[in-house]
Image (cartoon, rainbow, N blue to C red):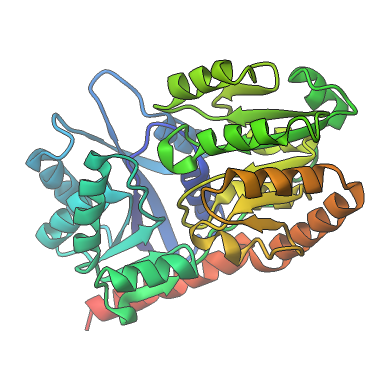
Amino acid sequence: MRARILHLRPSNFVGGPEKMIFEHFKNVDEEKYHLLLGSFEEENSSNPMLVAGRELGFDCLSIVTRLKFGLDGVRKIARMLKENEIDVLVAHGYKADILGRLASWMARVPLVVVSHGWTGESSKIKWFDAIDKLFCRFADAVVAVSEEQARRLSRAGVPDKRIHVIKNCIRLPDHRQDRREVRTRYGIPQDTCWLVAGGRLSPEKNFGGLIEAVRRMLPSFSDFRVSIFGEGPEREFLTGLLHRHGLQDRVRLHGFTEDFPGLLAGADMFVLSSLTEGLPVVVLEAMAYGIPVVATDAGGTREVVADGTTGILVPLDDPQALADALVRVASDESLRERLGKGGFELVNSRFTFDRQACLYEGLYDAVIKKRTR
């Protein structure tokens, strides 16, 4: 009989972690494991992640709750675990971790937590992060998406024997969009250096720092454009910052797009300005297209960005260092080619979903075996 594994992810869009889950579902051994995808929905509304999951043919389950952290959610998850005869619950994100831990105790189902990292983007989120760190201690196993996140979990009190490093991965593109067409679509001159960034418009992504770095790039280097893809609570702040510095024609906020990986075919560079990360999927996506990466030394980023080999690594929250690195790479076509090639070779050899699936399958087996002792 196939083991039944439920992945629970509170999400209302399809971003990096959601894509990661989808790809895992596609690569796991279907003869041994039946994977189900669960998430939360409000009454009379649909969840884009579940909609996308159903379109891909996945078995999707919806949890409708009145309160974000209500006990009714715990009871509904516990009932879902029992009714669907789930062998392992895999929780992604603090809401799934907390409610899932309580529900898994009620249903007597082992819990695996996937720890992507803690953002601390607001006082409210910092509080939830603290509770999540506490609940991670009681999980049957915790997956860290990077070696750095594994160290953070250990410092948070999670027993080392329960921590398993399974890094984020990326699927190499089957085909590339036409470079000229992509650049025309976004109004980028064909010979201008196009710098692309992507992520949630929230404090931990530090797009304000990127804008400051762009300001400092001028006037020593001027033949470039910057596009930031994503949505979030800092849109108004970032828009005001662009107008304050007169950069609205130089830097554009394009909003969220599901085709972010595809549009990278038209980019010359990818920029990561984050203050904290787990292991950033957007960096892997850029490398999969052979796009050179300039990134801050955040979280597990250094595990993929080897300075001078697969990208350029700069200190956290240092706009001048970021500006200097951007000018250096934008001005040197041969350097861009070398870094792009190094990143592509790294992703192609070490960050594949086949390898990731084998590690998860071994973890599923170990957790189920321990449960049946």
